Amino acid sequence: LRIEFINKRSFLSNQKTTVNDSELLAATFSDKTVYIWPFYRFSYHKIISFERKILFCQFDDNSGTFWVCDDFSCFLFDLNGKLFSNYKFEKKISAFTVASQPLFECERSAVCGFHDGSVAMISPKIDSAELFVKVLKKCHQSKIERITFNPQKTYFLSIDDCQNAFFW
Image (cartoon, rainbow, N blue to C red):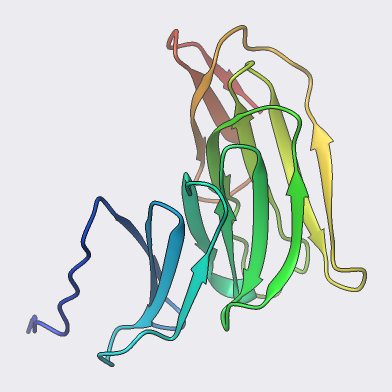
């Protein structure tokens, strides 16, 4: 086994990075900016600025897209940074995860958790460039802290700040 250093990046403030395995891209977000960069080059592929602080950024590896969420909105972009669609919620987002599906699966989705304890599924429709939202039955009484899918992506858990977990 041979492990080799590839690239180094430095950012001026607190940052988080997510990785796209299939395209060898990374997305680093810091404050109101997302930097898309390839592993093997020393330049940015795309820089995207937002009006609000970014809370979540995650690739959907097999669909060629990535999601960005601020306090109230979710945005879906292609890998070149072109906005596909966005959706603004009337409540504050507290958790987010993408339900990555195999390449042959056409239906893509993500799940948002909210400060009021509610949970919603988001599904993009490619032909109409829209995001469809289905709010699930409210089970939690407090802020959603985390959403976790099982490896087969057939169910997920939502976990609130009182450590209650609900199985979906």
